[in-house]
Length: 379
Length: 98
Image (cartoon, rainbow over all chains, first blue to last red; front, side, top):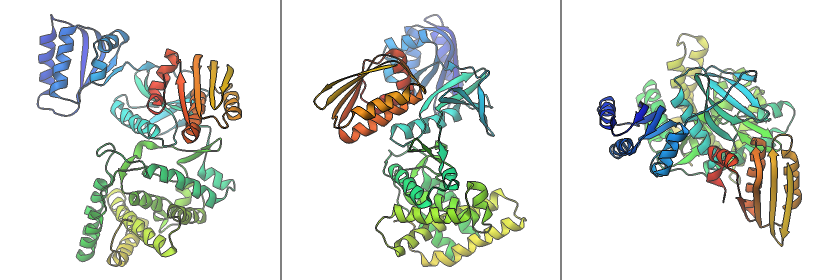
């Protein structure tokens, strides 16, 4: 919940301000964000109001302070006790080169090596902060990715500043003739760096929780016995806190001056690495299970290269394990992938479309045939 | 941008002054690459550095990764504008800055 503070808060109006804030909060017990954008001055009486708020709701934070107000918080030690941030820098994109446009924003190049993504929706501050927090978390934890700067104000909109990568995607490199096996090997190194990063519970969204939604839906579309087995297989996947990218494929891995970097950190989550391998399987194999041109359209590389990239990913990820072991992991990844795809196609696509029907049938057939033969979905 | 060095056994201090940006960054990278072999204690003295773009940050990051393997690195005398960049980008969380 965002609460705006304005003008001066001192002994003459602190009590009144406190009452107003309490009224706005009511029974709400989530995060309280005090927006100090229009706050000009705060005295010790005002500071005590904030202190009490912080005591009753530990997640309280103050954003958007002008430099004088920030200095007061800093001098009094408040900045060490709670999250207090300065006002956003103002950045102008006038005359800047547009280097990309997506559904939710436009990307400008503000100087030779920085970009700002300006979000079209003026109310997307929370989403921007979430995305930026994920990018920063990944960066600080040693995941090779674009350097994240701050959130800025662009006119009446918000923007997120990042390093501009002058990089080529792995998809492009494959099309330029770079060896698929070598690139797959390098991609596995990044995967392993991520997966060996352990997080604290709750630090990132929990993949297992999400996966239980997939199986909750899909198990009901299968014969009862198979659905029950599938549910228990998903339940048995261990709760681990490994960092997962969530959308790891050749278009999201970039090479710059011989260094490989990951982009698109907004799907970061945590859980057992099998979920990641299932998503990788989905990108290269699963999405094109019925129509082989899908992968090509989505990833920009030929289906043969996709298949090769996937089998090399398994080979290098499980270095030293035998073919049988890799086949068993591939089956686990496929089961998770087709469980997810069944739900996705049945809930998001036109159920009367012939292509959609054929994908759903493919997924269900795979599950019916392989779930009874599978005893676990983890390694 | 100007770069100077002071070597003392396996300890090396590199002082960078002026602006590090896309134009000057390659020179800094080359300088570090040419001097870092066998160094176990690296100090980057940024007293006279008044600006760095992400090209400069990228090189500092690369150097840090390299030093993680062969020794220690610290950054000293950071000007306040540059410090602000280190803070917003998370560099303060991953490097030793004094």
